[in-house]
Amino acid sequence: MENKNKKLALVTGAASGLGFELSLLLAKDAYNLILIDIDADRLEEAKNNILKEHSTEITTLLKDLSLPDISLEIYEAIKGQPIDVLINNAGFGLFGTFCNTDWERESQMLNLHILTTTHLLKLILPDMVKRGKGKVLNLSSLAAFQPGPLMALYYASKGYILSFSEAISNELKGTGVTVTALCPGPTKTSFQSVVSQDTSENKIAFNMACPRDVAEYGYKAMHKGKVVAIPGTINKFLSVLPRILTRNRTTKIVRKIQDKNRAS
Image 1 (cartoon, rainbow, N blue to C red):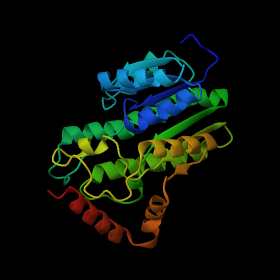
Image 2: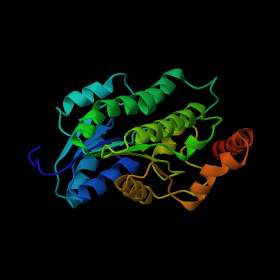
Image 3: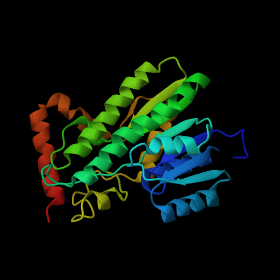
Image 4: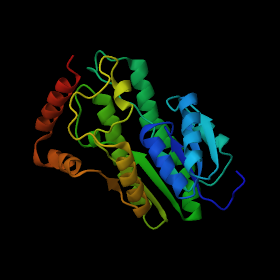
């Protein structure tokens, strides 16, 4: 990249939804961007749309982030460029009972949410610490706060991201590097179309957030160095329910919501 004076941000899952909105915010603040996604057409469209509004330099990488060791490919592709902001946004969900869902798809989700998120940060974080500055935003979910029947592995993997982010945030105190876990509730993105082949959208439209609003909330929280960011008053309340009710009770509530939301 020619402009060495600008800060550099790397965003995964940048072609649409929260990843795209966060990329727009970074471009507005004069960051150069490395945008990563699996969808070539949408990634190029995202790049063009950002450049229509902001003067910045954008590198796009077409990568399947669910593949093992993909983080090494990405790290080699960025050629040691110092990353000022890392946003681990890419993710997807899968609906169904665990005994009936497809393992190949589930393993892809676990690779993406857990291994790629962890390994990419493992590779980039030491340079941030060495330079004494850097910001990380990991996309968790409101799902992280309780078990999720019918989306068991999705909820569990988001719980991992939250716990992991909180732990390393504590380890990084005093280094100049911060880690924020963004935990949105239902957000109007393409997420639902990927969750289930039979249901393309939420039947429960209550508490559905705008991706731009969620991105702005998470972006501000990241720059403030907040450890956990939960956008929306209702979501903040829902996140503490497992502390008020028993885990068994909250699990039953989630199951009822999932049954109603996915009913044909």
